[in-house]
Image 1 (cartoon, rainbow, N blue to C red):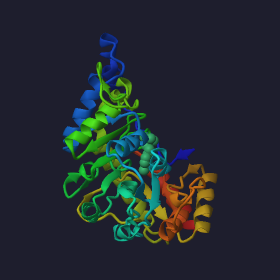
Image 2 (image 1 turned 30 degrees about the horizontal axis):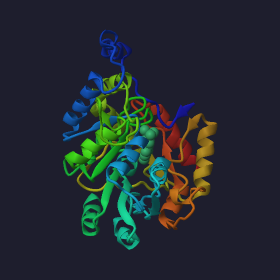
Image 3 (image 1 turned 90 degrees about the vertical axis):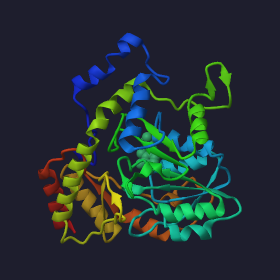
Length: 357
Ligand SMILES: *Cc1c(COP(=O)(O)O)cnc(C)c1O
């Protein structure tokens, strides 16, 4: 079975060499030298002021909500992975869904203002598929209404907007380094904060709220291990190669599907994209289901990223309509895309799509 993704694995000897020191220093976790080196190397690679390596991309969002003292209503995107919404719920806040822009599939910045109420304290938006949100409009609006901004940049590692890492936007940007993501550390994630004090708070929170014998605040365990960091240290130097390979495969998809009745999200100007996913939007859900089933019968497992539209989650007590997101979520499918995916597979996928629709 060909899956929608296939995790990149570094050369085994390189990984073994990276973890060798653990057998001398017995430093397995709790901010060991490999975790600190990974943080430093990512900051250097992406030109960031700070980055805290945490255990996953979900705890990263929860830490961000806590560190910014967010309560009440959080305006968020309905078109993302479920963790974006559940993190808000888990922190006892109320998600208020803002519909998406039909071209970028990110939160529609022009629809945000009408959703702001006296209870609104923050905006949590996702750079979905690695496509940057309208960060300028969002920042202006946040300033005007005194709101915090968190970006879920789980898909956006390596993306730059106006020559700056996309992780440098917002009060806090979170990332996921899960095995299914473009850059991964098996499990893992990160938070990057604009403000140095907020970063300090994030650091305290991710490690039980204490430093040695000094107990400052309550916290949680959001740390990650030396073994995970070692995977990151092996994969990080490959970032440009990983993105270049995916770019080539994405371009092959686009050329083979050029005459086919599908649409594709648009990447805003001034963006250096990371080619994290290859989503296609079909004419109807019926066509999508037909294509998905035919591909599956031919050994190709696609994924409905992202369905359902998150405002439709069955456990929400209160929700609001998002017609664009609900419509796109029913019709969008991610095709297989990973490092050095064989051209033959892309040809096969495109041929099946072409004859099925
Ligand atoms: C993967 C993902 C997450 C969660 O990250 P984990 O590391 O799996 O916890 C959050 N948001 C989005 C948009 C994601 O795709």
